[in-house]
Image (tube, rainbow, N blue to C red; front, top):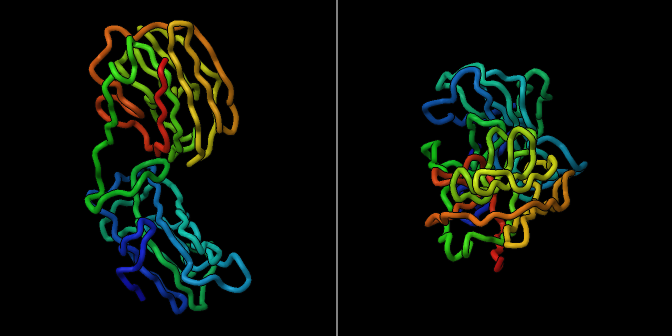
Length: 285
């Protein structure tokens, strides 16, 4: 049984309560157009157990795609707070009759049947053509990249800067698919997370001023990155990574000519990967 209008993680009432008497399923259809056959897809949902079961961590349901049914992730009875579950695989079919499902049957074949009554809340179920789940998609299934910018002359006086950002990438370092601008003026002046090396790179005047070693991090890992470019030198400091923390220095170069805007976690066309910005501190260089 499905009950709409339940409290969700954002404090609204967009969640659903799913109750199973055992050996049942509910199907959620994915948006049109579906991801292409052969593409890598991830699916995710926020879930919360309606009531913990005696015995601890027991499965309440299996969450999977109905197209190619070998992969699934369990909703567990100890998820008494809102928890995001996710899985990923290669999509084998794009039939619009397929989609996402919560199962208590023994489907897929390697999943056990759940025959006792269970109940849990779900919110924000989505499937997307990506290696990792991104932030919540609107009902249309698509969204434009976020663009965050500020006045360069105010934030980077005379072409120098001293910034610290606290971020939580939605992806792991091994899942990064493109260079990620962290601070972007133009193609010649930027600080970015380099996909090929896993390093944080500061480029000034078209030349590489500072390059850290490879940094390694898990999904949602909180990273604190400090980058300064002053008349006395340039520096990048990494904190919070699984490995690669530390400070790297180099030669400085004023950003010139200084553009009208400086962009944060993206360039003038928007973000390249999904990252949560938790804190931004701008100091006098």
